Image (cartoon, rainbow, N blue to C red; front, side, top):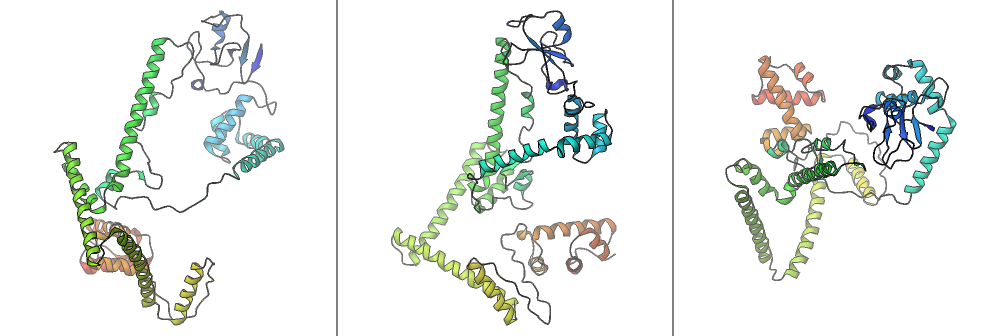
Length: 432
């Protein structure tokens, strides 16, 4: 007969008694000869000499209990595990809640015992240090090299697709809440043991098969939602978003044929346009076309650099500031960290206008609103949110003061004033 440590005092973490199927309460008996799954009995069934299949009453056994000291005489093993679980649940340093969860010790005793035996204990600290050194040595030569990747596809701000894909995290390519999110609950308590009957074993296998089918459906839906933007170009994607509401009227095959036919039409038009461009350039072979595309790309890159320089020079009138910017760019191109020097100027230099190209929500702005966002350097999505908040508050109170606008929009006060004055001037809101 041996005494052993019970791994948990929670009845839900242990299999039930094999004799009466009741929840096990310490102390209880574990057969030392039956396995590999543990054969556990309560004291009542053990005293009756319960036998089942291969288990006999004369087998060696172990008494499972945690009512004995481990680190200190006044702390039992059950209390040690309860302390670790409470610190994990409530957080280190929250000794008041830790003591409330334990119920057998006060906060001073919990803090003193934990600091003495788990923080300042040289045995534990050296063990943790050795484990950390072993882990660092194991992963030192297998580090994954970092390389930049393309920005993942994201739905357009406030579009139908963005509402349908609510909760999707593009950088992780996953959803915060999956389809059929609680599918795992049906098999979390399934345990395959040797003494299962054939019918029970077949039933458990059927539950696992059903779970696999639900996982396949989850993966199929995720693939359809995530790859929809990669499947079609932007022009066809806009048509797909507009025609989605009619998918219920026709069958799925007809709807897919309709979208695919428009995608094919778009590809043919783009290919024809490309061939016409080759013809105008005097190209008569695909080999020459490849050379033409490479030269065209180089020409576009050079033009883009010149355009960027013109934009910068347009807003920087100071020659010394221009020279500093050119030196900084040269240092960046050479892979050297640029040295930023302070240039004394008579006035404050204004930042260049914000480039709105490709920013979500730009298509929803008129020309005057685009000019405002460029000057204020405010992204269109944020401007639309601020505008809607001010409009709602103005309608609710029948007017709006600048102080109220600044209380609603927690940004730079100068930007808030420009937005407020613009909305007043355009007639969106009126003063209180």
